[in-house]
Amino acid sequence: MLSSKLEEYFRQKPTLKGTLVGIRVISGKTGEILIDHMGELRMRPASNMKLFTAAAALSVLGAEYTFTTTILTDGTIENGVLYGNIYIKGKGDPSLLPQDIEKLVKQLTKQKVTYIDGDIIADDTWYDDIRLSQDMIWSDEVWYYGSQVSALTTSPNADYDTGTIILSIKPSNRPGEEPIITIYPETDYVKIENKVQTVAHQVDEDALVIERIREGNTIIIKGEISVQSKIQKEWIAISDPTFYTLTLFEEALEKENINWSGKLRKETTPNNATILYEKKSPQLKKLLIPFMKLSNNGLGELFVKEMGKIIYNEGSWEKGLKVLKTEISKLGVCLDHCVIRDGSGISHVTAIPPREICNLLYHVQKKQWYAIFLQALPIAGEKDRMVGGTMKDRSFHYSVQAKTGILHTVSTLSGYLNLENKGQVIFSIMLNHLMDEEDGPDLEGELITWIGDILKVH
Image (tube, rainbow, N blue to C red):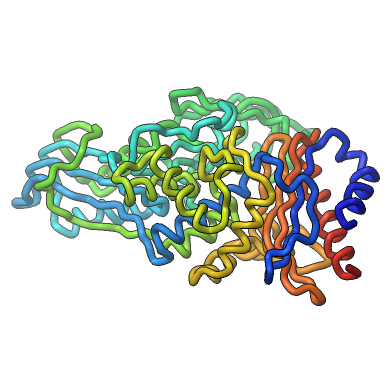
């Protein structure tokens, strides 16, 4: 009966015409199906895929798990000279920041090193050399959410958008002049071509066009910016995060007046190298906060590769997804009904039914790490971005803690809805083939209200 009422509700929504709508609502206590509309249809989950990755990572790696970045040498230090090579070995640490690289270099100054008679070498062999998630569309490559994946990578800040820089565009005070464009961190690794003009009139955000040359790190900015505009910021993915990190290390050496005789290159660290310094990431339970609340794609793909490395000694999507599938099958997910190709949901091939998302959300309640999983989910209406996350500006008539998802023509929302008379219910709303995915959040909000209202009287 409730499902027929739902279909009647759909007919009243012209924005849903031609849209695939999959909905399942179950009791959080018993798993009983309360509402279902095409709940068994495979649909693109967008970032709802992160629910599966988070659960698998907690199962395999554990809440206390940390990633490391290590500085090593195959030489010796004598009278201020390091005779040998320096190795920067990455093991998937997404929390390496520019200031951390400076701290790594300062470890050399503490040991009175002023000259390195050798090469500066990056070691990213902890993972394979496949950098981009399969099925990701090429136009996503320039943006932070489509950044390349490497075992040695740098993030600009504690949001941990790996392999990205922050681009700031400040209009000139005078129309007709170029705006001031800066990047963080400051580095010669990225080149800027400023083709923007400051104008007196107001312009749309779309008046600025940002491009990055593929297979390179020249960023071209074209268009107009109003003299009245605030500083505009964009997070841009760079090409080859390993060599980017190596370049930041080189530039930090220069700031510390440490010279060297060799080259910058990539190579595996020899077994006889000795550790000079090791930096650890925050624990997984803390990394899950930006992963889930800010919907951080790079973290999702790193978690997948790390699971492959730990279980099969191969940091690849193939092995990592094999681990992920094994773990979620233990959490009530029927793999026969799922196509899983990535860990973040940026894939346009990954397809999962609402039923299997609800099954996962039901079974994780029984795990000892459930409180950590739940805490990482965005909370509707909470303005602190590390609490409300992608739901901080969404308001509902009911208490909602859920994962959002946005992809071209796709909007999804899955999680927990608290009702006084029904207790906690679990829901998954998946909208595919929308004319405009920006309509999704409002439609999901209306559906959440409809679900809550209808369940209160049934």
